[in-house]
Length: 114
Image (cartoon, rainbow, N blue to C red; front, side, top):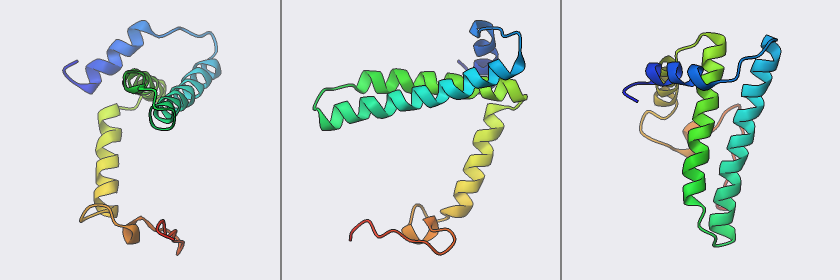
């Protein structure tokens, strides 16, 4: 894929068609949650069980992105724009890279070293 717009258009060509719009967004929303859970499961097995699931992580990340693209398609959003907005938000939040101080919101702080 040369760009995200082409990827979004490709995703449309292989997506199931639904009679009711709510069934479509339910499918994409539940699909992304399921695939993200699969990513987490593969990481757990790789780290905790010493069962290398890195290929599964990679595959499920691709599936998660497919569902993200389909959610964007459903709402008529440009995935590249969403990523651009995310970069802008994170650049403001972490102007010098990640810090615990910048990560805090509403006065709460977790000290991971306690």
